[in-house]
Length: 206
Image (cartoon, rainbow, N blue to C red):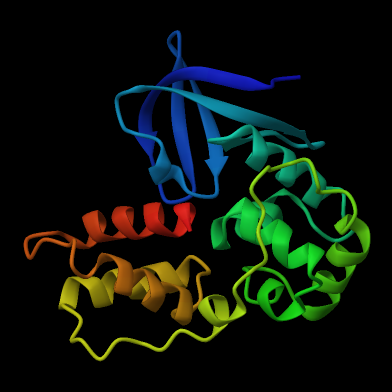
């Protein structure tokens, strides 16, 4: 069973990277591939998922993400794809905090999570997440679910990037929150792809 792989990122898509390890290319599905840099050696923590028809690899930048992913797929009704979607929607700290606070409102804003699934996650995991991360703090509900959209005009490339991010499962409120963070950092010559990379990096970092 694989625990981690170290190699160069040979190729990147919106949901996976191809990791070149000594000349062998491993396709590794990720919640946010853009946290790994192209053409540089990286270490990727791995969960190896074996099905009857395929062996799939899921990759994570940190041990904490890997551990949280494994806790999530232990919950009935949550498979690897849904667990990756959950990790794409918030930081491990915020996910754990929302579970421990029984914050169904926050959990149901994550990709693939309805009310019943959120209740099941809380029931199964509330008391099993204490030691995954060391800096969990109470979730700021106002920041998480009540941020007003900026009145500042958004450039056309950002609007395209926004639509693409929503297509990946992020909520409009989450994307607008990222815009507030990035709008003073984006260059007028940034392409849609560049903006998406910056936005996904910001979403991953929380």
